[in-house]
Image (cartoon, rainbow, N blue to C red; front, side, top):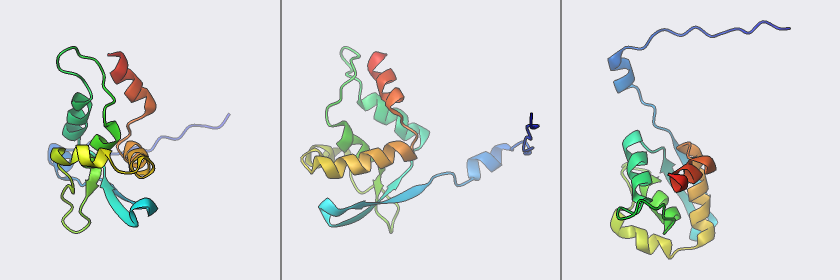
Length: 126
């Protein structure tokens, strides 16, 4: 049996954690729209807000309404400014775009922000 080697890393300091750049981006080719978009990994705060937007405030029931457009709006950024390209006001219009195009970006955003199908199922259960 082979020995397991562990990689010993030093303990991080507060400032090292708060100042490190841990936010990844990715290009997603969307031929349906005639080009490429840049998506970004969500912050913890953004992911919590996204998950909260999928829960009906009155009864606590998980709602899938426009879930792809919601995630696209949260993750697509302007490649030059790195600022969000869309706002909450754009979600309805995004929802009327090609399901194929939205799904490409949705799937890539899920992977980049580590949102698994299990996470979505957990939200629906809780």
